[in-house]
Length: 240
Image (cartoon, rainbow, N blue to C red; front, side, top):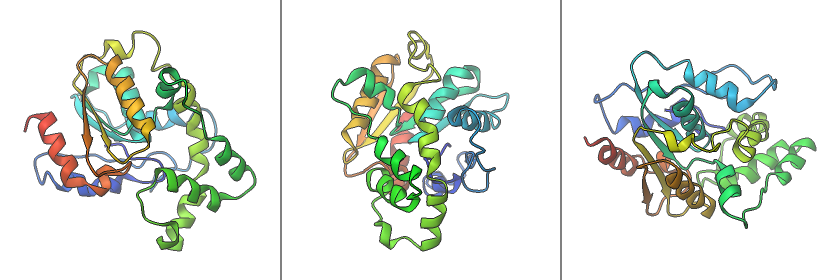
């Protein structure tokens, strides 16, 4: 289970708990998050996080669940380590390169975040990012230590951008997604940014047999805000 940006593996506790003892869940802290090592800024952040996630794969194929940034890593693992992945669930993958390829009206809005971080306005940048991609809890309602923790790591959003917007990993290269032969489930919330619908539909067109679902009343943080409903969707997909 691969978490979203600025979160940690514990974000999956609610969803995993819906399955009691049916499965063994592994939810690592991605690089620069939780108790994982800090990101040193060298090389490609997406590739480095992918290597962390891949280190948890074993000899037996596993079912991978990813959310937001973690969902883009999950998709990358399925393409780069196909024998290790049995099925794939992608909650709201923020793979903006799909929207850039499919929607001529989509605009990359990362520049404002870049400028705020470059100006040292890390808390302002974090607040702006969460207003678009957070879980709905007002910034002012968050404990200061939580605010400070996320603000200290906000730069990873910019570091992930090349892979998410420019597809530096080549996931959209002709034939790659089309060659996926595992079950894939794309889930989004009905209240999410419209770009997620574009991304999910674009991926579904490219991945043979991919299934899609919309969770009514949910937003971008649906695995955290609606764990029971998400678990029901997973049971249907996994045919439990």
